[in-house]
Amino acid sequence: MIEEVIRLQRAMANAVLTGEEAGLLDYLADPPPGCDLLHRVGAYTGGYHARVEESLLESFPALAAVLGGAAFHSLVHRYLPCINRDEPNLNYIGRDLPGFLADDELGVALPFVPDLARLEWAVLECFHGAWLAAADLSLLEDLGQDQLASLRLDFQPAAALVVSDWPIKEIRDARDYDRDSVDIDLVDRPDSVLVYRAGFDVVTEGLGEAEATALESMRAGATLGQTVQQLADSGAGGDDIGAMFARWTGLSLVTVVRA
Image (cartoon, rainbow, N blue to C red):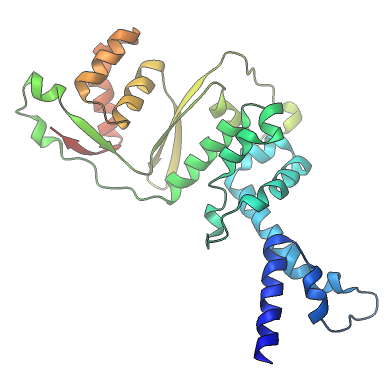
């Protein structure tokens, strides 16, 4: 009897996770009039897919707005086999969707959607992620120029910089508008979007080229001096690094300053 129950549980789990429902038919009682066996288990197998779609809709509202209901529904079903089965939290099942979109048919037809999904995922991670204490800047007071040039910064783990060839912030900002009323020029409009938390809100802020370059450099582990040189070499304005640093610390983005 116990072995049969185990077989039933395994059959049900397989049906819920993969959509292969035929294995359940041997274990179910006769259905009531007007209902077949697959209809009786639909609350389990279909329920899982519905919860996944609801979760992804909450995580990627701008993507859903761009695609429309039918296309988003189809995307979810193509993505289902790629979901990490060991992830117990529905909030995080969309982690691999931006990468999935890069190879999906939608990423070919609408090449901005992988970056839009990356931005939306960054917003969700920032909302749920840890926000650490800001760096103690008192140690900088007595440093000379050479010491300042050797500084490296650690940034908030929940903050992100999303760089794209497309105006992804404007597309995301239009997520609540009627699709037919949205008309966004996509040509030659790259975007660099800083994502960070302010209180209980997540802020998405478009950055200029110089600040995006500097932030990307220092987040990758470059020193302050190396970043200034990179900005100077690119003509992006290395003289502004002091103002950038002050802004980052003012937003509590910097958690550690290492001399």
